[in-house]
Length: 287
Image 1 (tube, rainbow, N blue to C red):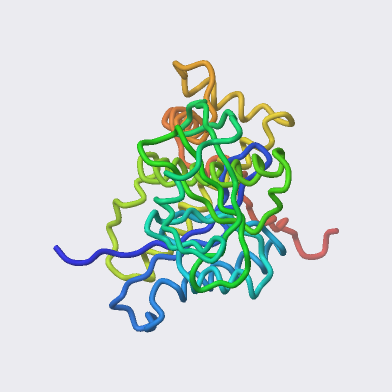
Image 2: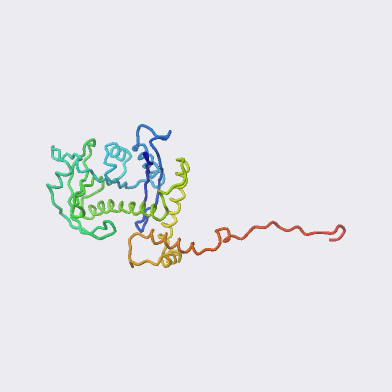
């Protein structure tokens, strides 16, 4: 056993709040393309790809991206962002430094809201303060969220949080990021993302590309559910037990598998064979 591969992936949310991959690359620290910048170099590639494809967007990131270089990069590119902070992150307020954990003990939730957390509707309390993080001079909105887990969540954002509606919008931006956890779980369980039978990094990335296309096809089925019957046929073929879910990729993948498992021929049988035109035999001297 040795070190495995790293995956850097960015997704965008569709109108129905389902993730669609914008950038996906599997890389290794032993590959020739790996630079001393490490994971930050791939983060820069992700941000450049999202900017090229989508323009000005709001980036939502977890604690793994609580990094001064990431904050400075997003600020220089003038992008909006919502990033969850680590509890030992230092925050400057009124000339004093506090850790994020200390701020959570100092304040209580001012507003109450319902959020979808791990596919369940839960009640949360939140409050917003202004502060500066180390390595960045700009004052950010620090959102403290209570009641969802054992420890409060601390978010840093440059979005407008002047009103309660704006504050709730910024918070829900972050919770939409939990859909990517379901995205990867579906990619692993339904499409065997980690079950590779090739060894070269190029072949692994090629297989990852085809899996990404399959996930994109599931997103198309979900987004066009009001325009065609394929979505409803797949849901019916999946024979679901729960009447209502927030994430449809599992059911759509199950339905497609059940439908295609009954096929007796390959996909080539769906296309009419193209035969060359037969030459008419002629007798010389007769028209």
